[in-house]
Length: 178
Length: 178
DNA sequence: CACCGACACCTTAGGTCTGAGAGACCGTTC
DNA sequence: GAACGGTCTCTCAGACCTAAGGTGTCGGTG
Image (tube, rainbow over all chains, first blue to last red; front, side):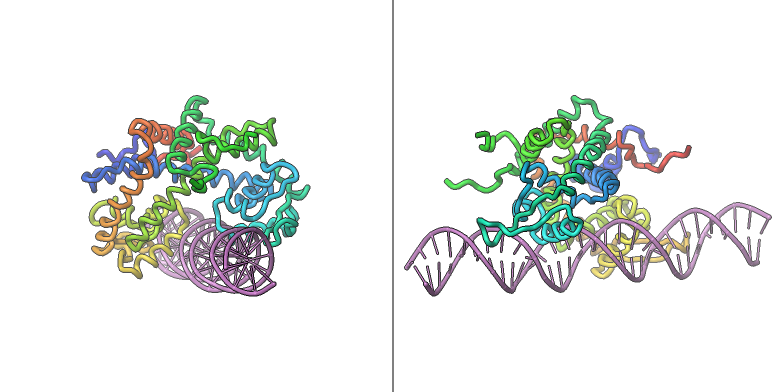
């Protein structure tokens, strides 16, 4: 008995029940938030990947193109800036740029102001590709949230923002000098 | 002006502002939820990885050990069952089990009932390792949520569960027959 | 009892990432 | 103006994953 899956629970409820039975001494309630975030991120990732594929892109490429597009004309950033917004290592950015350069979506040039730096520029083809994919991407995201009411979505965004802020992940995340 | 970072925003607020300036014709509000989920999942992943490393484990290994431990005595599951709870491909499970078997944390044996199936069993060493890591893991998760009130955490867990359910990701999530 | 689709696990090739480190350049200091 | 620490980008090895395919087993059918 009690093997029947209740229609009002999700996969994490099952896991929490299992832990409650095996380790009733532990408070596993944090998993109710964190485990679900992991699962949702996975669902989001898969849906986004399918969308990008329809436009001949993948998620890492879209990430870079979107950062350049967001930056506004003349659509230029350095690899270091891209590294910071994408939250990946410099090696990952180098490889992403290699792929995008080969496809003609970006160009690399040396900076006039700083001999160490590279300036990455979105090409017309790159901007066209991104602007074509962006509405589809937003449709996908909107679709994933369609099951929640506008109020719930707003509430969720607010809670997630508060959580991020308490983790100390703020935009200018460098400790400011005294 | 308006370059000054406001202390009440997070990284996603900056991105939303950029899109509002560059593409005021698009409704980017879904990013406010989905982008934050991605960022939070990344923070969670990094914190968990550091915790697991203190116990000589990594996230994929912990995932498998925890699934076996949750299952209860005699701590046995098939690779297919592990594949379903871990949401990875069979090849990934094979490799995870190879690593765990080499470390002596699990054993593999053929099933008596089904000649195709393998039975994965948690060893005493495996159970000991998991039970040692689990409280530390929960401390890490609790610490990540410490900035939110109990009410906020509960609200968040509820919203995320509702979201997962609307996506159709329920425990017995097999595609329904026509 | 031989057959055949379905299933369980493993194998292999290919892809992206991390982490460590090299090479070049900047700005300051002595 | 030479030296020095710090910064920027790239390179390379190693880790983990996916996707596709192979082998062996199961269970029902004629």
